[in-house]
Image (cartoon, rainbow, N blue to C red; front, side):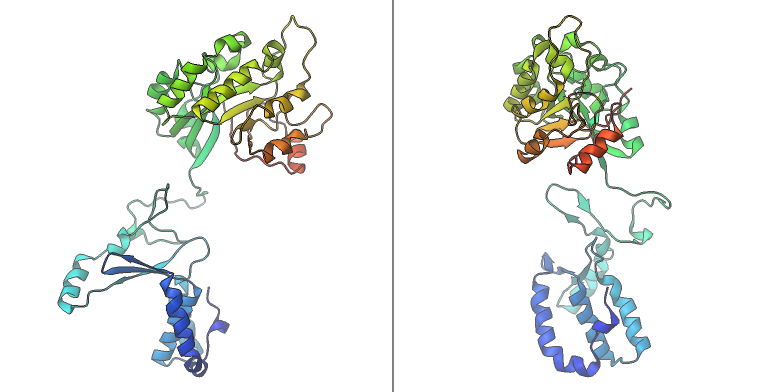
Length: 384
């Protein structure tokens, strides 16, 4: 936005014009991009537009307030508002006959310009209001929220195969305003081909997976703990499946919860960490009790001892899931205090995903957030 008070009077501008113009010319060099030999984009900002207004006032000898206000209203919208870029396109052909011919051919060229940042898609235009005549499709979103494509980092969409857990991918995805889903531990090295063919490929939603460390994957949502011991992990096969399906597999899923620790200690998690290291992928670790304690057992493990042991096994980029779980063995200990090792984990480059799910606790969430610990991602953990 250009303020009226920032404009100089005609007399003052006449005195300052030479130095101001030199400043603007130098400034333009850093904001001008040539698109071939004949087309140039000048990315506008407050200084360049203010200079343009001052020049128009000078050339037209405008000094009355109505005229000045008209120039401000005409050129002011060229200034970016902080959430977009705005550019003026210059099409230049020195020969007049060629210029006429080419300008006729180039009609509408301004609607075919786009910007692309490495790794992203093409951006045609960003503005509070865009003329509908320049759009391929017009969607009326009055009264709606317009958001970028959301990513759900914790989904369960291996429908039918994961029994009561698996939901239909597009219901969780694009029909819920989410363009990308990451299924957490549904497919395994054995069931990944089916996940690709029957879930990822048919879905309109972009679907990825964190491959289960267990051969059975997420069958019936882990209702049968006997299937998830060390004997149910095949490190070489899971590493191979992850590497051969790198377009689909973005990580490994494992568990660190008291029911499993009471049965096998941390052996299963160690195998999961080994898979993640060999595949060079992040390990996503479930915290909070999932399985019941075994009926025949000695002394129960201390749930508050699990998190510190697990952190020692993890690498930067690995993910701690369910920080707000109401179940024992999570971020908040049995005395209601946030475990001090959480800060150490963050300092070591570990990440936190909400994994909301069915065991989310608002009380635990408040304690964790009040301790200054904020998750990196907001996985919904929707399941049947």
